[in-house]
Image: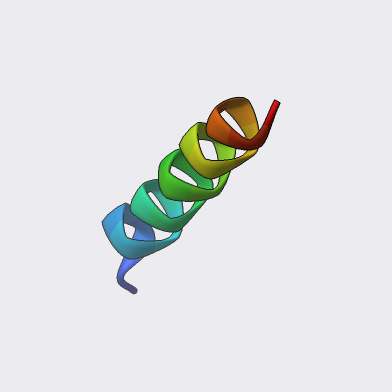
Length: 21
C-alpha cells in the first residue's frame, strides 16, 4: 500500500486550505 501518497495528499490539501485562508 502506498500510504505516503495519502499522507502527502493530506499535507498538500492542508497547505492549500491554509493558503486559501
